[in-house]
Length: 432
Image (tube, rainbow, N blue to C red; front, side, top):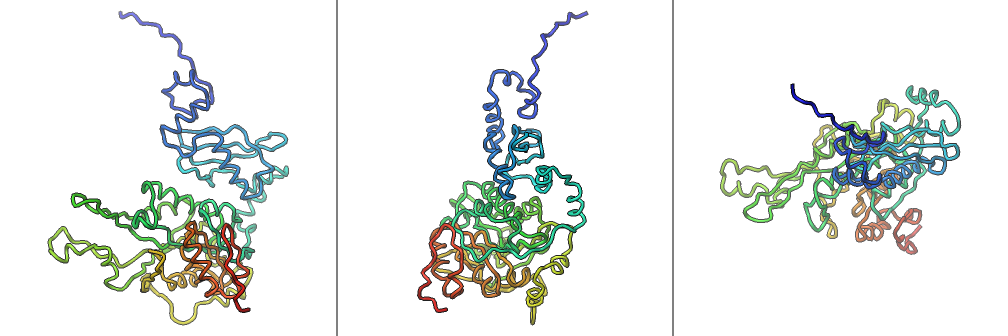
């Protein structure tokens, strides 16, 4: 009979360590300070949120959107590496009584709304009330009412991801935008990787979800992009950006409604060079279709209420009546529109496209947001249809174009526009 060797009992890790590191790193636990352990795990998994301070900062920003940042304190945040999330306990500032938690995706740094304690529950617990009644009313659709946004026409110079954090919750009635290309034109935008591009888009879509009204629409003009080959020995690469965007929208709380195709005149796609090789040689396997369409993807912020609810509960029924579509309209998902050109911007979309989206998915006096404003096409279209606008742009030369051209399309109302982070245009010469 073989002799068995009695092993020395293995030292167990502290109880909190199991949610912070791998189980096979017990020896590492005993010798390494807590803060460094978290940093090492985050680094090995490439988490965007690496430290306790970062998790607290994100949680505080989330609380700020509901004006709760001064009434709520924090317990000790912990990272749950099984699910790749941070859990930030929320406590009453005075008594340290736990009243909820904020759950943060460690990879994206976004707050997981479905897993985070609802703001109304936090508020009720702060006041010592039972939140069950309020939640029941909300579930039955009795507590949420459509309100008219108090936001006026606004131009914001800055990064839209950050600018959206300063906007009130549910203060926008429609989001329509065309995000920058991923490395399609180096002079326009450049990201280190496609993954970093998608992460940036996710954060902006996530923040737009908060400022968008219940059951309202987010429409995005997007298309696949062609990454040109670096040499003759390499092939060009076409990236299906719309399909990756769709996945993000669904994961961020939107319902898919429509895929509209913006159809350009034949020949418009030859500028890409796609299809010329086949046109010359006519060899099988070389065939590539010339793109003359772009997607106009339509999503609705998830809600249990039908679209009729948004119509019936709109506080300005006169605006609803005046916004009805008259005359001819698009009966299919093929919209035939000529492209636009701007001498200072390489990728503007036509104002006619913006007008159709705004007309079909908003009412008069609604607020239309474009987080990638470019030269201000959405603002121009919104103003022509008696809607308000919020335009966010982080490129100084495009902000300058918006401010220079605005008096031409907005007239005397330019004086009432709110300019954030940029200089208002000279309106002295505008006639009343």
